[in-house]
Length: 458
Image 1 (spheres, rainbow, N blue to C red):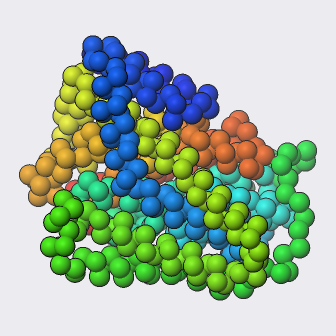
Image 2 (cartoon, helix red, strand yellow):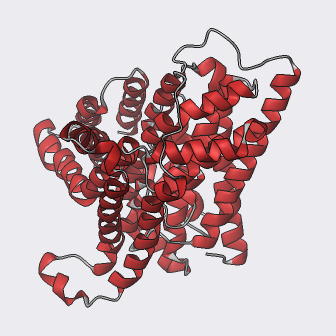
């Protein structure tokens, strides 16, 4: 029974690493596992895989859609470039590492998708590193640190999907466990920058500079006509502030009007707040950047490209969720679940962290791995937390933090895309990406688990 699950996981990992679409092959791998358990294939596909995949789309499609559109609007209006250019210009070549990390962090914490951030920041990062004769191989790690780590999973209120998913399972919101999130986020940021600064000094001392013959070098462009960076940041701050305000406001609504829909107010608060905040952010970004997008062609590109891109992103994740639910329905999975739940140092946080990390690593997806883990075991973790008097906010934050650990292994799609954008390869740049987006986040997660367990911080 368990052998079939392991076989399907290995198959899915190989397929993802080779770059084949999980939309097509996740159900194939799920049916491989089902076949080894002797379950009928067609009912498993239509009544388990598809039902759960469609359920995930129903719950999270608005966030994927509006987040992707917001990112493209920030890109097409020039707002993202204005912010990136201003931060890198102000800090200069001497602080190039910090400048690139900070530029990415501001954009992702404001709700811009990490792929848009990579495209927006890379030209300025390359110019800054070239001016300071800093090894180009470090640029992908700088972007990864600012985009894939503390602003994606740790800091309170981040509108990235990895911080929204746990709310569905634990009745929490985007601001869950703020103290734990801040501590973990600062550890990732400070530890990552310290590592990259040490690597910069070591490589430069060995005589390595920016280098020559690189591919995908950005063209030299005139940045004099970029919008005012303070104005460009208004949509980001609007999303963050409005998300916080609306989360508080919606919690105070009378939940009676939701009874006919079979949901609780707590289960939809975080999603509703972010939907409204992103809509306002998109409208505001279009208003302040209208001079750059006026005309149907540019407006079409911003809205349509974002909408189409969101479909690929959510279908990838939904397919992985469908896969995870097929696996969790198999008799052999109970042995796996029992083993994970047996990791019992008196708190469910350690078991949750290991489970989410492992599944995120296997699938190469933070949101996909976390969704699989929480769909399969979220209720058990919540029951365990209630039994030992643990605040569910900690379950939310540790799940989010753990999704941003092993997800960034070499086969991760975002890592592969980032390297392509920067014109680098795994051999040159992945050791530093791995340190700042896998090792340091993993250590940070378990450090705050210890703090939360010993001192009760939330």
